[in-house]
Image 1: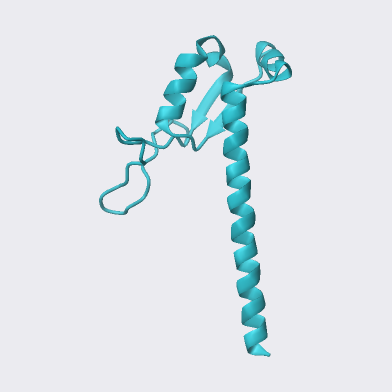
Image 2: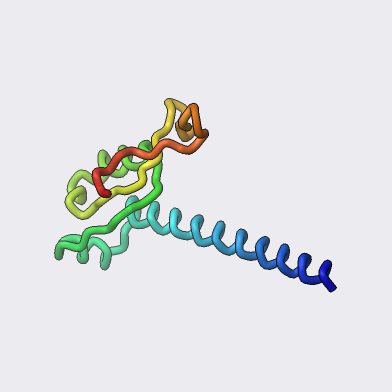
Length: 107
């Protein structure tokens, strides 16, 4: 009986991991679509003052978005931007191994 409970818990944890992984991927792809291929309705919302908050993108993506969409900058806010090296790989803290995030001034 105890083994069955442990197996069920393991299965639930695995399913939760898959779910959250898919949510993160969907969020990132939505952000990329909104940044680089916004719908006419999204553009109209931005013109009315809507600001979209983008979170967890790399500094390379942010730079590209800002340079390619200069006229929309006032509608973009970036948080938790991941710092990368020249090849686009995330930089890591040498002591902790954590991915380095740019300071956005929002505490």
